[in-house]
Amino acid sequence: MGLVAKFGPARAAKPFVPPDSLLEAAGKEGELILYSATFPEPQQEVLNLFQKRFPMVKVNYVRASGGQLITRVKSEAAAGKLDADVIDHSDRGQSMEIEHLFAPYAPPNAADYRPETLLSPKIWPTYTPGWCIAWNSELVKNPPKTWMDLCKPEYGDGQIGQVIAPSGGSTWSRIAFERLVLGEDYWAKQATTKPKLFPSGAPLSDAIVRGEIAIAPLIYNIVYPKKKDGAPLDAVYGPEGVPIVPYGTGIATTARHPNAAKLYLDWILSDEGQTQSIRDQGNLTAMTNPPLAADMFDPKVNKLWAPDFKSLQPLHDKWLEEWNRIYGYRQ
Image (cartoon, rainbow, N blue to C red):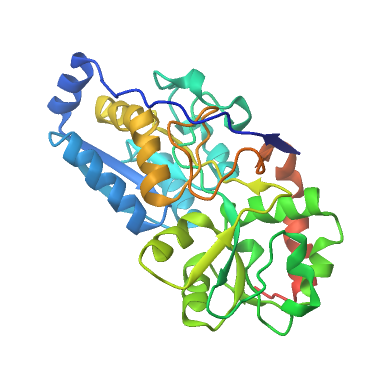
């Protein structure tokens, strides 16, 4: 139900040189409509870079939360009015619910991607964030170094924050890792520290910076920009494994700008696009051998853990209900 893999060593990046025919066709279309559930700030940074690289393609960005995005896509498709050219979602399980709405597609460098991170030949991991353990470096002088450390009584009395399990696909990856790798009793042990619960990673990361919470599991791409800006944050990838969240992105079958869509996906899945994701956003990558060494990630120590969504999906509701009960969360 979980797939473990290690990065190979970083290698020299290959330049992204799209064929002239694709550039010409995308330029004639002149537009791209992207539906995305990603955080708006990093997504806008990516789009700015893409448009700087390919100014002849204007990107129209439609952002919605995970559940809302899937509902919108299903509703528009049922009415024969799906506007999206590219659909991008952090919950690959939900992406698979609409797999029939994605067109067959593979980037030129498809062989560079780990088979275990590919759910479908139509859906690709454009972003691959990883879960870390973060803390306020001004408050915590003896920080946790492992996932199991988050169960220690010394970090009790509300020092730890947690994103609620029902928050979406990213958190589902984390709690599946906890259950399968750290043990069926991990939630019960960790809940004894009485963690404070948050609806998502954004307010939780802000609470750590303000000192309202001292420690939290967080996706590193939330921690990384704050740390670069001088916030009192530090983090570590747990040696038991790094739960990753490979996004599910693909081209809609009804895309009205299919060449612009292919250019966008080819670019973001290329070495150039993945280098930007690793360097500027603090993500990992679903590539077997990355074009750049990721911050804080040591391939000799850390191993990636990717959830096998197909086998886990039947357990989704049951495990969320159990997590809610153990942590005392009511929706």
